[in-house]
Length: 316
Picture 1 (cartoon, one colour):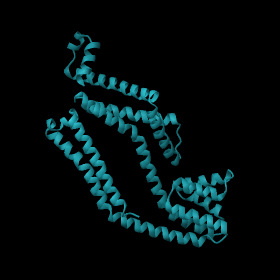
Picture 2 (tube, rainbow, N blue to C red; picture 1 turned 135 degrees about the vertical axis):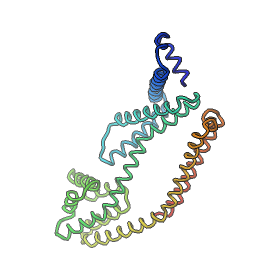
Picture 3 (tube, rainbow, N blue to C red; picture 1 turned 90 degrees about the horizontal axis):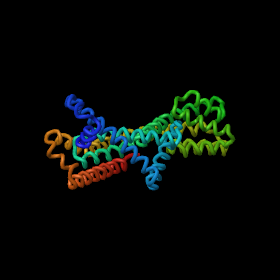
Picture 4 (cartoon, helix red, strand yellow; picture 1 turned 90 degrees about the vertical axis):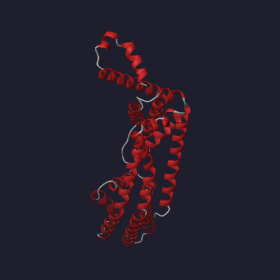
């Protein structure tokens, strides 16, 4: 890789200027040229793929659609163009990092580093948004017992169900207050109470919330007292939460085993590379080494997936 940058450097910088430069400055210029060239190449490949490859364009549209959907769930609204720019920026940054990592390797090692880092950068925004969306749902699930307690108290005080929801929106912190506020907005726009609650259930997809929504809809249709139903439901959900916590504590060892199994080979590979780089270099400079890395990667993913499924089978 550095040979290519040196060739460009010799072509654009006169010899008398190069002779006056120190080795550190020449190396810095070579690195800057390499980064600039491959940044331009990466952007060009991205643009060409977006224009000429229908399959890639469909996949890109799917990724952006999933990103926008996850952002909408968190009340963060972007246009498809803005989401595409976020993916492009993340991809370019990771391609630059891959260029730096593979700069002193052979061409095959450099290309492998650029491709791996570029793919990771392209999918990083979607994975990050999915992670924060899952954390948000977990927080909403923890707020449901407090919501039921507040609503049952409001109903005992003589408020109607709609007024109890308004009271919860004012007093309970986000994110569940945002979701209940969306329900109230839908009711104001003319949708029925039942359809608004069903939309909330479909939007979040939480089992405890589904129980609450079903109880509220049945009570609203039948006209019975909702207060004792909400109180019993609160007790049931709190008991389920305690049992889930115990089971998660019992399965924590299995989760840690899966994490160790996944990370240990990477740590060992890094240690071996530091001890003897010549021993590890053939993994990304030869076809046989590349095939070995691919096999290791597939076995890592399959082992981690199997352990994850075994652990999840014991969870609530």
